[in-house]
Length: 482
Image (spheres, rainbow, N blue to C red):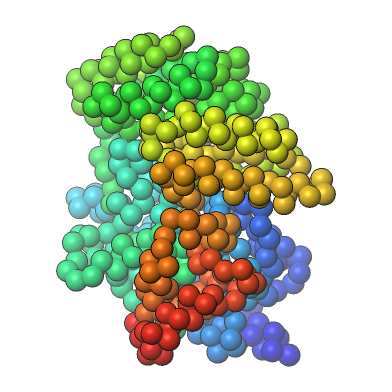
């Protein structure tokens, strides 16, 4: 009866057609891009901030949690409703509301596909810089929630560097503005707090994004190495030479074999690794940097260098990198993608450790990652139909994350903590750190009503309030929320 009343109220607020509750409809919302699962009680597809706010208020009255969901491409379990409840999905909130080329900004709804912003801005010589590999599918709301990165964030920074302001719906169902159109609003930086908060503080309903001018010149280089360690050392050497490319990506042998069969990008499948390097700026600048990069790569044993000058050549070189994750399905029925960060100088040692750990567990691994900022993405290849395989892969993932932390790195660079890595947070944060974060959550009035079971470590069930959260709420007081 309680569930029927919940669904009936949601249908009244958002339209009967846009509230899903049949089991066959809910199935597609039980997972995202990782290997975790969680079934919602209902899914709402609002088409306005007001409808989002109404759905949040209804869920609160019924005592059920809310999980926001974009395109479902997330890779940390962040969009999984692990405590059931209501999923608010944003595909209908897909409008570019304003494009302001003079001020180099756009106002967009959370369901706008990342790449569509650049397509719309291209007529003005502008683009949106953050470019996750899933940019043809992922949406801005999820990008903001996870502080998404991408290949070109080496030079231009992650999502947080390109968000000027936000409209949000709080856990109480209020519509609130954070930041502004200039990105220089006085007072506390609430926009900075919300970017990367993984849907645990509020739900994004609009974003003011920064647009950049297209560079005058772009040169893409493919450096081919016989060994992964050669390519890893070249990464540090390029940065040490004072060159910060727009992008500096690495792919290993397994990845290239899959990519070539799927995309035919011209990668040599017999090579140990390749670096995909892009420099951009003024024509004189890119010519000089391209020569310097080539010299560094040759000194460190690159057996071949290819140069893409035309848009067609560059697109072909990038097609393999952008399509790498999808191509891995040719190597195994399932793969588990990890996201850790290490200092660039530790790349050779950590990669050796990753290969050794995977061999010890009996799994193959394909590495494709943002080498320039040390952001590793080992893809562990397995078959989830084999009994016990998923559990062993998750144990292996924990070992790989420990390798990253022990090397002076972190447990995530762009995929977020989510459900997947919440119990690793104590490896990099103290008890005091965790309490401060929990008190911030309490200050937003979110408690476990928004995206429960994410970010904060607990040995309890997915949606149960952790002891840190209870302690923080007690100290902050019951009325300490915005």
